[in-house]
Image (cartoon, rainbow over the protein chains, first blue to last red):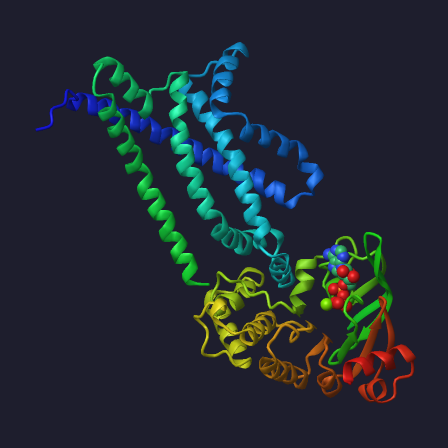
Length: 218
Length: 241
Ligand SMILES: Nc1ncnc2c1ncn2[C@@H]1O[C@H](COP(=O)(O)OP(=O)(O)O)[C@@H](O)[C@H]1O
Ligand SMILES: [Mg+2]
């Protein structure tokens, strides 16, 4: 019989960590997607040179390792005289980081809608906005969805880094347990890994289902 | 009436329209023929304001298309245009493709728009395809759907841009039949086409386009039977042989 010192209390501690992981992922995805749509559409519809500064900024968010962004933001915010909890800093940094990736996905999705299709829509008398909402959005969504699901799963795993600035999310809570108990580190990591999987699995299943539904119409 | 007066249009340094003038009266069918790259598609897109122009002007029923303050979205309601690549909206069913503009642009109720769309789709012979997605239709069927989609706005003018060029030969006839029907019903049409026999049959006038200009224009009998200019003759020889 398998014996373990991991108690129900410890599991509850891990579950709380998972709760933070979920919450930060949710906030980062919502904020990052809203910003990403705005940035991505801007990049897709305005002439290239006007959005160079925005493109440069987004490049920074994408190319500087997230851990460095988190630590820098967490150190500089107090220096600027602002007060923010590590949780708030994590949400903001992750949302911006997500928005940079999401902007590229959205830009690609919008540009994937053929110009000729959009001309056909406009020549029927649809306004620019109607073209965006009735034609571009639904057509681009089919292109964007798989990448966006991938982004969600990636961001969920990236939240593990916010433990470094003191947010006790899933990975951090498992490390705390490991240090406290001094044994069974692998077992605890397996539980943490299992929880990550249980969060991811439904998301990727949902994505696959939506994709299949889209494809039926083609 | 569509009045095209001395229109000039460039893409960067490339001059595509170089002083085009043409008047199309109500009920008239005018065909435009000419080599590829001569600016025929560009001219059609200038007529409904999809492309800006650099010189001259275009009037549709007296409204200057490119004037500041012209409501292009409103103007486009009365100009239907069908393109070479039929441009179905792939995420919408055939019926939804056709009802979209009547509902969103003309603000018709769903019932009203459905009734219009069903009538137009039956008109072009797609009465049994309402619920299909465009991806399940043949090219000819998609092109006829695009025609129905334009007609659902009850346009006063129809512009056709080589609507049969991208179709398999056996599907060309059904689309031409649809256009023939429209011509017979008195629709004012400008058609850019490579189908010389068809142009000859349905047109009141045929214009030969070359280097961004109307090189020669006349009745089908004149232009096909007795072209005056050597370039017109050369072009007709090359396509009719
Ligand atoms: N959006 C565009 N940008 C730059 N050049 C274009 C554009 N559209 C068309 N052209 C050029 O304008 C010329 C005329 O094109 P087009 O009107 O499509 O000719 P046609 O329909 O007679 O074949 C061609 O040389 C084409 O390459
Ligand atoms: Mg063309």
